[in-house]
Length: 374
Image 1 (tube, helix red, strand yellow):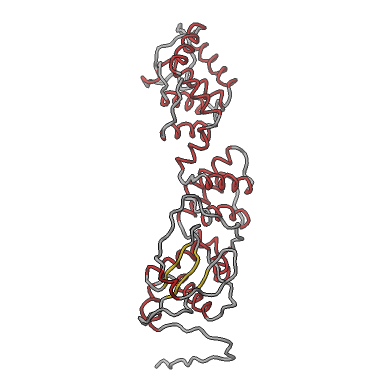
Image 2 (tube, rainbow, N blue to C red):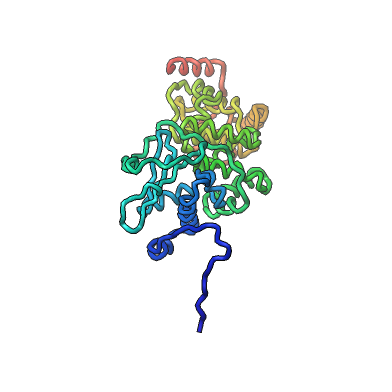
């Protein structure tokens, strides 16, 4: 037979009262981190000297600030407390509701502030203000990047999307990320609330530019955050819409409209996957217009894909491939034209377009077409 365990205090310093209703009806169903947050709020009510803020609670409980907010929202949904938000979208106060059904007491209000110390609780009437969460027309102010502990990083890695993100970054960087290296993706994931695909694209873009310093990556991320860029599509539009590559494509194709999502995906592939420079992209667009008479992104993609497959990375390589193709065509008795880089022995009818040599007159005609579409 198991003996009962007797509980008692040693040298009592203080105490926190926890309702049996919470223990019996709420605690078992709640996440352990959520329980810690609620108990700590109860403890703070009994000690006015404790500094209460999201950052302070996060540090005290060794949980991320994002998890603290999640816990507060969980308990608000359970009607154990309610939160008041200020005009900037920050938590200004938390009211812990008694579980006995009695009216609220004036000492059950906790004031949270990111920068100011705890102040005296407002009068009871203030708690009757409707709880309306303000609409964020501008991004919320971001607190300074915290120093994440190994334990906090481990909690992030419990999320499959974050874990896969780290695997991707390590693969692209060619090294295993240490705790210091993990601070930046953790900050973007937790503080800026960027999605894993968006962070992945951010790293892909920065690695392509050869700028992998955390300070640079965070600077770009903050710029996107300030511009409310919260999707990969918006990020692609931001990266390429003002770049010289897009200007070259618009000039070559004779268009002035904004690029669509599929077209941005192709431009992204040309730059980040194929590694093509602006001159090669412009040349592919020129050849597309000469061959098809229209700004066909798929056709241009086939040209660049062919060059990429052959390992051609600059215009010198394009010229060499053209010369090689011309020599083979001359030997077989055909008139040569610049090829997309595809295998000349291919039986794919798409690649077997009529062969011709481009003259100065052809390029003058191309120029007239472009000017006519401007």
